[in-house]
Image (cartoon, rainbow, N blue to C red; front, side, top):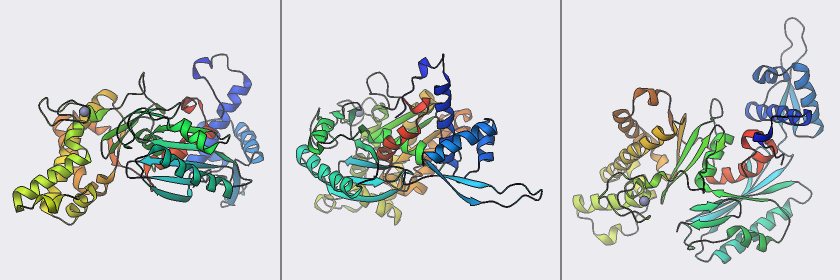
Length: 411
Ligand SMILES: [Zn+2]
């Protein structure tokens, strides 16, 4: 990875300028492929001859390839040749730890997943990590002779990204302070770069990196609605982690001082009203009070069941999700006021009922936020085809090959 310290760019030498221009051209190709040299020149405003020289270097390094010819112009100008990122230049492995299970996946240089294996969750971290390491080894064996850039790992809870430690959070059921990074290194026993991050942050990275947006968002908040409410914040194209990696805990914004008890020990947090367990609980209450459904019948109900029943039109399911959406709408207000993002992206099971929850969130927002904020805000569900945390784990590896100053501080 090309490390560049943005604070020390002032006496930029030619090498640094060349690297920045090259990264800019490479990223324009990544975002807009297929694209011609002339179009690149128009997008980034560099001289045509400079772009041509950079493209020649990228072609020589096999980072990009050329294909396709456009129409010959009526004036008899040259045909356009289009540039693409070479998907086979390198590969990345993504590992996604979730409370319900784990996934190991292989992607190409464009972030397209080529193979993935799902593993069951385990209460024993050593057992879980050994199973994951075995799958990673299998994948690496099958990639013999190809360049695998590294392993990106998505974790749950408060994470130290440098060491890959899960500092707090009962999400994986392993207790506090689990050194996942060093355990995985020990199991793998090989020299391969590894990068770690919390899954909600990786959702944010995945949206900016692989999301389907008219232009890549620079100020984005990703809200992961699940067992808890996690978030990832990207400001000016960079993660904002806070001083101790503790930023973005919007799930613990207090909505009511005497509300239900939250996992953090306080009362009335957004999470205690709007995370999935609260929604399942509310659904059960509604079923009991309306139809007298017994506890035994409701015991195994999951958020997936509630969503499925709501989508079938069952009144209790619809109402439980509508209440969740109203709390989410209110809970998003502090996010908007404190960070003024251009886009808020929601991930998690409930986004399957987007048509049901989106209008209610908008209604709550419009009752509270001045038009100025809402007119400039996009509130959407994830645009990714695969799970955001897994896609983000892959992006965490690949982004390094495209490093420009704004993302050079990812690690
Ligand atoms: Zn809380």
